[in-house]
Amino acid sequence: MSLQTKITPQDSRSARQDKRKADSRQRLLAAARQLFVERGYHDTRPQDISRLAGVGHGTFYLYFSDKQACFQDFVEQAQEEVDALILARLATCKTHEQRVYGVLEVSMDFVKENPGVLKAAWAGHQLMSRDNPDGTTTPSIVDQWAARWAEVIARGQKAGLIWDDYDPRIIGYAVLMVTSAVSTGDPEVWGDREHFLTNLTRFVLRGLAAPGVGNALKI
Image (tube, rainbow, N blue to C red; front, side):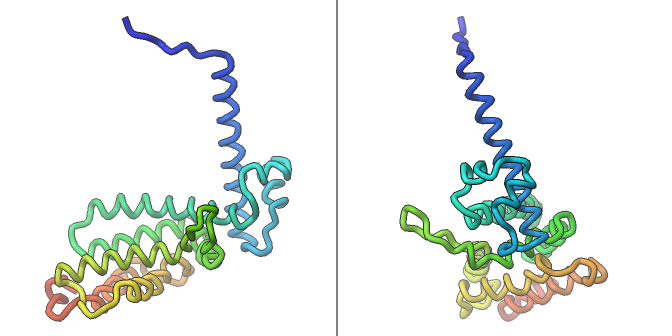
């Protein structure tokens, strides 16, 4: 005989309360996202976020210690969305060219479907390097993405595909600044999509490719 857990009225009430809390926090984040994109960080106030979310002003501080904490959660949410799309795309790639092209294309699609989100996140990235209660520091979105490129570059160096005298950390930032044209630019001025992505992909690969690797990468 299987044992079944009995759900008490108190458990049911607690579950409803948890759901309401999650819903309220999500409404606040959605409102913050809209206002940070439309107004920018400095011109967005906690009371504006609360009002747009349809909750009392005090409710804001139940979920965020201050506006900067709310902005950090907005950036992290956007980053998680982009990361999930990129990881799914990378799983289908077999070559470095496909990986670079894929990251750029996914970023372009995200920018088109979520106008201004990444631009707002990047504009306030310096605010994201903040001290945590445990003494550690949360790196900015730029620092985190540059570190990921640095990892890719280091792996390429070990495989003999990328110049071995590059400092992965420095070049990681350089590549990120180049590819940020997709994340923060205006899709309307990119022109032909395929032409833009192909040229930017070739630029990145040719800048990284060790001698003799260019032909192997077909760039």
